[in-house]
Image 1 (cartoon, rainbow, N blue to C red):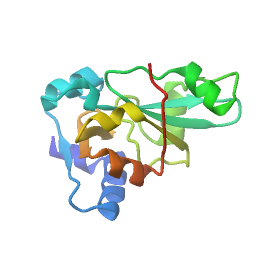
Image 2: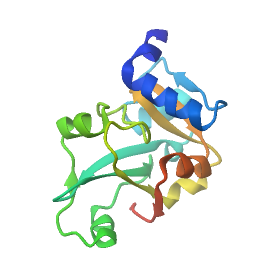
Image 3: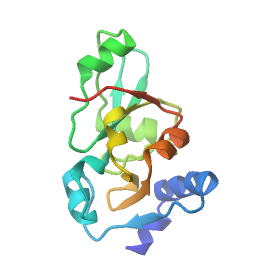
Image 4: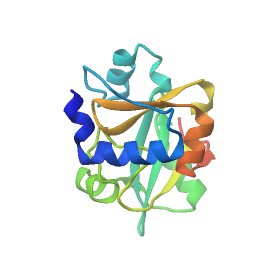
Length: 160
């Protein structure tokens, strides 16, 4: 499992984390964290403390929504917030192209392209939250305040 830390997407996340706060460590998991449920079981934590990083597509751009594992991203709320009629989930190919990560390992940080980030306020409930670190078996633990700082995200009500 240690060779996962040598994968380019994981190294990208590790670099951003170390520049932000050297005490934030990347963990490899024995089991996949491809879904929030899988991650919560591997970490023995509540499913809501798992950050789902969801790439959405508008007519002209992409945005990343960070949502608690026990919630769903509300496309209707996002449409209203952005005053856009047409917002949908990005395809797997678009996720890889825009973020540099594959679905299941999309990190909230270290994307290949700049994307606006929206953080669901429901993640505030947890002392610590867990996010993917570039691979489905690799995560990092962070608190809500630092997630907000490191992503420069906007905190909004975007879940249902």
